[in-house]
Amino acid sequence: MKISFAEGRPTGAYALALPVWSDDMLNDRLQSLAEPSRTLAARAAEAQRFEREPGSIAETFVQDGDQVRRLLLVGLGAARDESAPLERAGGALAARLLTSGESRLVIDLTGADLPADAAARLAYGASVRGWRYDRYRTKLGKKQQPTLKEVVVVGGGEGASAAWEGRSALLAGLSFTRELVTEPANILYPESFVERCRTRLEPLGIEFEVLDEKQMAELGMGALLGVAQGSVRPPRLLAMRWNGAADPKAKPIVFIGKGITFDTGGISIKPAQGMEAMKWDMGGAGAVAGAMAALAGRKAKANVVGVCALAENMPDGNAQRPGDVVTSLSGQTIEVINTDAEGRLVLCDAMTWAQRRYRPEILIDLATLTGAMIISLGHEYGGMFSNDDGLAGKLHGASEASGDKLWRMPLGDPYDKLIESPIADMKNVGPREGGSITAAVFLQRFVDSGVKWAHLDIAGMVWSEKATPFYDKGATGFGVALLDRFVADNVEG
Ligand code: BES
Ligand code: ZN
Ligand code: ZN
Picture 1 (cartoon, rainbow, N blue to C red):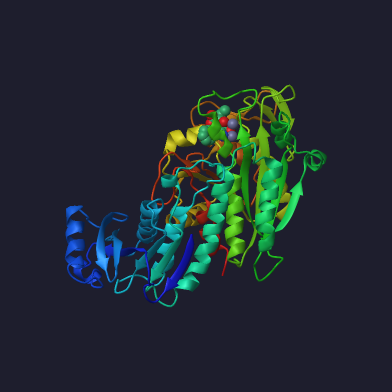
Picture 2 (cartoon, rainbow, N blue to C red):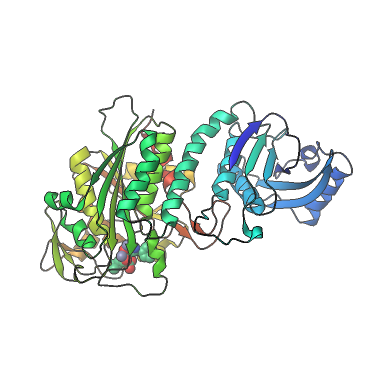
């Protein structure tokens, strides 16, 4: 989507959108229209029961100068202090017009009472919602093809373009994450994941370090390698470093993502029904890669490392068996009761490696770790587990501000006891009850003392079966805006 900002409306054909708060006088907002178009638009709003709820739309055609124009009144609601309504309104407009036949949308803010960054936020909402990935659709019918190519925001004031710069970096990161999550597992596997990140992120100034299976074996990453050994696709550990802080030697904050490019369950194989969803079991790694793109894209003043633990979990003659005992990089041994609880196995080695390599004060992992998380929170919140109340509070703040919602979950000794093993230091699963929490306490065993750690179980959040004003059905990009905001509010400055 091409985005631009202007002081006055362009000439020629376009659809015109006017945002309206609950308490605006509609007549004021329609001032640019001559009669009888103004009355027509007001009557259309009333007839369509347009009550200005955030993202609601009343649509009609009016005479506007020499053009007959599609006019959209878009509701902003009443909460002028909240961040979401503007994005939501932009998203609703894009959703409505994407395949409408219109190629240009002009959102006119002239005379509206809006915050300084309103234009950028409306444009962001429209482009986030307008994202699609049609690479494999060679036979899209004419009416299904997107037509909307351009959004012009008029009357947004002088700061609009500057506010957009930060937003467009976030948009690029979010789009990259969605692309990674959408790609099928025959295209995106550990090696190709690394290459795609390289192509996109190296030009932004991000440094790459990649471990292959040989290097991982030499180091002793038995847990990660155990997961990968059933696949013909070799695993990778990818570390992407962005050094933007004034002090280049300042310790980085570390993000770690679960990057299972396909999760069959391994020998503890999953049921066939719905298994295709497990192409997005790399959503944590995807979010980390997208966040790195967003941070580097806006030249964030922070040192950040994004680590992706990449492997494919397959059943095979060489696959690991239930009951196998593996030795993790930390030296701790793990009895693999269920080969489908593989995320924690790749993450634990990545966590040990990253802590030894970067000595971070803050470590945050993102993972589509457990189905139980979806049973707990559905598709509304990601689960947050943390050993530090301060970090949890900051993440919660970033979650509220970004719209990537998190809900804190408990940790604790009673849960930790549930993963004791009769043969090894721990087993990789506990009982069915509290499955997300036993997964979290498993990871906690790999956190070095003094490190502030948070684990985000985003199993219910990276893919959506229904469209919203922020995304169409499919990849959501969850986590990118959250991490970007967390860094902006807590690491930079
Ligand atoms: N990738 C899955 C978790 C998952 C399931 C994410 C459904 C999104 C949707 C994970 O590797 C897994 O299989 N977890 C098991 C753990 C169990 C064996 C203890 C689960 O949740 O069933
Ligand atoms: Zn699994
Ligand atoms: Zn998995």
